[in-house]
Image 1 (spheres, rainbow, N blue to C red):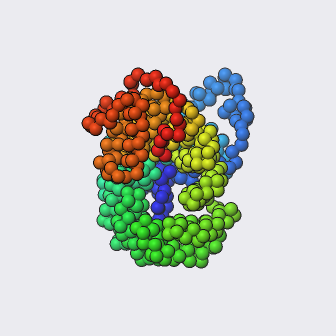
Image 2: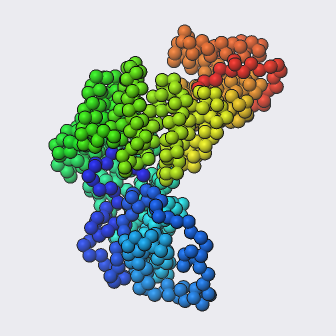
Length: 601
């Protein structure tokens, strides 16, 4: 679920049918309903779907009254009772009361499902009530961790009500349904489907309220955060800018809403490499927080300012910002809070980059002591994130075994967490790199394979990161002499990186080189020569003929040309012909020298 930089005291964005006092599309004070005394439904929020219910028990056949075998006459009587127009509201109220009483979600789910069936019997006249009961049913499924079962329920809910032209109540139901469906897809790691649902909800909300309503700004920021998670920063920037414009129009200067918008905008600019713009937004956000008496929150912004100074190479100013934040965190949250550990990690990274390795390792150890005994209430995600950052520092210090241990701990913390598939895939991919570095190629391939499967399932199979992971998995396959599999992986990685980066990007050229070496190992010398001629030409144009990488490529090409009895063709080869993978596999005699293949990591 998106939720990167929301202000500390702001309520979370409600994404299901809200209670009468807290709506995204405001209802009239009195809602006319075809059913008198209809109770309002609960508003499922992020907390209602964040984790499976802790009291969930393993159910056995027949443990629920809905699953018990009942005589046909009783079942027929129950079906007939569904035609009673008062039954749906009554069952929906029972579901809400059951949840409120803490009896457990199982019984509430049974009531909600029966309420939905009763509203279905009433036809189009009860479309709004049907949608509301389906929202409640889906929220209960999510609270049980049964997200897959919630998806078709929510799809039925958004199909039950018209999206426009039927009044504010129907617009609210459609908006809530799409946002709740987006959150459910997000918990399943399906970012593309999630963003599609959020976008649809935003369109409905803007049609009902207008494009400059403050509630539209909340949804724009919500969608922008989702785009950030999907690394779609241009789209995120457009939405965040719109949010900022709306809040500046409707809120006083230096408001908390504006501060939250600027923090998100800084995150987007930092991801895009525009650190000066990021720094400007963070400074303005810090001033807004101070003006609103939020001094404690200023410390979090100081950490962001320190990160930006570090990226700009302004190390003394970065140290000052980190130390300032560290003092506040220790005084307000205690010496053993994970916020303190996070600053230790940032200082460790800074001292590593400035060559002070002893100080860097000391700060890593201080952070690890806190993560080993976290204060109560610390989320596994916070600990895992810290362990991943420390692992990266140990990897940079050429301590892959220690880095691998930390990644294994992070993986154990997150592997059962809902909505963390993308993060888990990233950890597994990094573990694959670590296994490769220490020569454990079988485990490396297994880690990459698991990461690739998760990335495919979460809809990230077209991202540049996915292409890089495929390339790394191909290298592991080469070390295991699985050459055909490696070639398939390099071909897929090449297609993705060509689409995302272009054919002359260094990462794309690295995959070309790996594919050429693989073709060489398979005996497809002509294909290998054509690819290397293109790679060498691009590298000479970009890096110059005296660059060491260019020299390495030239030697590899000369060796292949010598074997084939040819000389280098300096005429530009069309990329379309160059990348022809359907040519016949050539037969090659003699022993292949594996050390001379020249794969690019």
